[in-house]
Length: 124
Image (tube, rainbow, N blue to C red):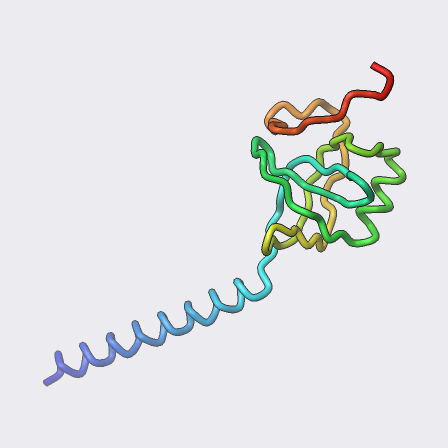
């Protein structure tokens, strides 16, 4: 009888732990933000972001901080700059909540830039 009660108690505890874990996972997915390292550039007035070593680009819905940093940096159109951004991705868009790093004082060797075609200057 005591082993049956112990099994029931353990089973109820396991079920409660699983339910609590699922609730935490639901909360995390609803407001999850991650850190992304890669290349930011502006093209035709729109910000785009490309993860290190990837060719897919995401449209950036940026806070004013990102636009201000790009302007202060002197970022030219279609010129990539290394950034670390915090935000969430949904449907091909990166919604930026914070800029962790904009530019790099040293060469970025561990973050490849692939699949980017920068137009040749006019007159060539």
